[in-house]
Image (cartoon, rainbow, N blue to C red; front, top):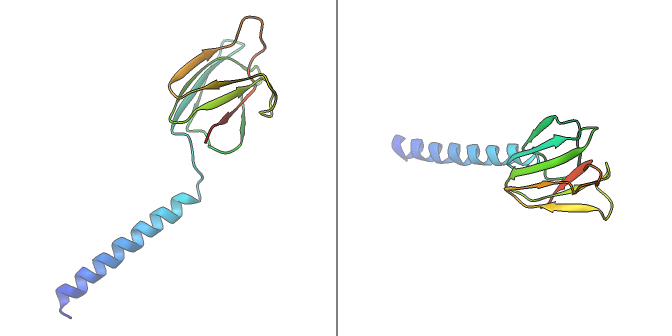
Length: 114
């Protein structure tokens, strides 16, 4: 093999290793719903969550949320409980906003649909 062929082989191997390392390194970080979820608490405070994890139940501020805007690339489900359980939930699609019904309690948690 000539020096040029060795260099090309070395560059190809290096690029393959770099791609593998990037893929392996990122996969351990967990997936997230790219974008933001913004909500207003019952105490009129605005909160923004950037790229929440796709897995698990996410608790909201202690006062709960009375309005939410989903600016992520994934849908979410809002719950009135702190553990993402119960029948009284609401589905909020991506790029959609919602407000609690008059007389209803605030949302206390949410889960990302994946």
